[in-house]
Image 1 (cartoon, rainbow, N blue to C red):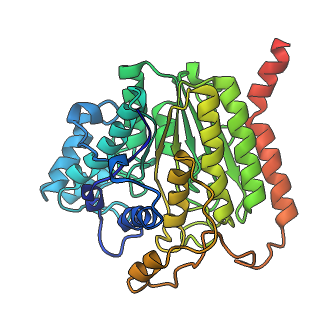
Image 2: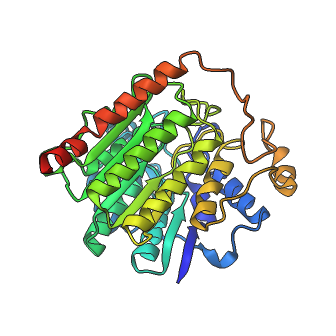
Length: 388
């Protein structure tokens, strides 16, 4: 048994809307190359993804929708019909072989699941996954199929697992939450920028689940301009209390890298500090509650040059207990990619202290976030009191 596997193949780079679209899978290549240049990954740790079958996609997605994606893939879906399914929009333009490319991303997460759940590996990382906005019958927010939702349903049916899904993308993990909103055996935690100014506009603390699933869905909407300490406090406290409450069999984390100050689509003020801490706490909780069973996927992250490779490399480095990298990035990596990058690549693993000017409302934002966490966790704490 190996401790960790890294799911990747060139097929994952074919999920490409167009050359101007912000969702750019070149970040997978940049991340893997960074890990190779520091000698942090061996060829035998890289496993190839497979393509998800139609039967697997239908665990979550509507048959008519899957058929529509297939027709769109070969240019045979009329525009009027496409729009009903969220296809052919500015966010999710149609591209050739879209169904196959999307199925590979889902299959990559299922490959990660099978490695962990059969005991071949303790941990598995599929950075090509994390497409958390996909709905049962509609594409949304750069996401065609929702690999995490399919993977969770797959784990329930094949391995009878209680699953904790943890989403630290700056955008609310709406597709996954709604897929399991009434399911008490799937717990979701999403820590994201408030939907007041940001897509998809959901993820308030009052979205707690429904029916039997009530009280197993947690949202922590952070104020715009939230900084590292506040983010880390919210994440650490919430994840620890929710693990203790839910006692999962397996943890799946979505590791969007778009809460960073430099991300062009969001309004948070995090730095590389949070990307060191996020996988560290998840890793600890997986060993404490799940015998180490931890599956991680990618997600958002739109500064693909300066932010995503460093942030995503940290997930793998933590998985392989190799997370003490600091100081300069490897010269070979900088030399290879700088000529292709439209921005100056960062010289170090960590961000400079003066990355941005001080946030004038820091104390107010921090206090508001702390109150949000208290309100979000109130049902757990209230239940504890009533038991006592």
